[in-house]
Image (cartoon, rainbow, N blue to C red):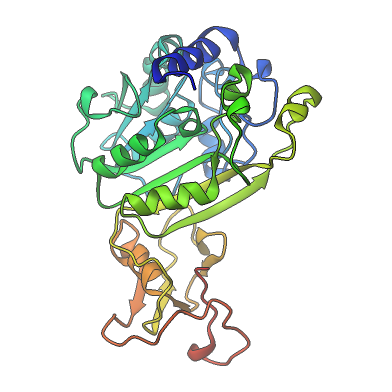
Length: 349
């Protein structure tokens, strides 16, 4: 297999020189498949056209409740997501964009004043750093200094994914959140596909088998992550489809928290109620693809979910009753069709 530096140079060439705009992509893998929420779409209208045309992403990894927070964007490219985040964190917040491709960073930096003027900020709240997502320490990002880490279709490109995730959990504050979109595969990708420069550049060669991702996070001490969305990719290129063979690829948005969680959903009889206080989401709050909390409606939750709602920046938006003093066994992810609070549906499986 190619050495790390060779892989990184190939990726730099692909995103710095081969691709001029998102129209040059040969598949749909690195094209955004998740629609931006309405409030983010309004901000996107203000983003400079050159920044948008050189954007390569496969999702919409912009979580809620960001005002005043420090957000790190891994593989920021031309800076589209950074400029969306800039408006959302506000002038008192901070956005750090990291990328290894000089030509992409040139585009991002070129339009910094344009966006600060658009937003009415007197002081820029974005910093673009040239560096590698596998080694954030070398560019000065300290331990427990970041509230949220995002990434949009970039981690798959790294030849050292375990180092990437290790760095993410190092820089996150306790209770901090990783919220990212990327390409995953339904089975392990062959060596031939991994070493194909086009397939790697198109975010397929480095796609991580979802079960290997679960094992990787477990090794790093993250026992529970949540899938927010999952869409099977249609590559729309017969030649590349032939190379991919029977491997199925997915665009997935995933969140994980820097918390001490259990490796199974355990039942402590806890109930969560969303207060409807997140301005952009007054009627319901979506934690993952099977946890949608309607305002004011009690919902049974497992111990891990309770922690995600009470030991993170979302704590002020939920009322969670119960603690972990009494254990009722594994959480019944299929509980339904009961009455009153005892029968409220909760699911983490």
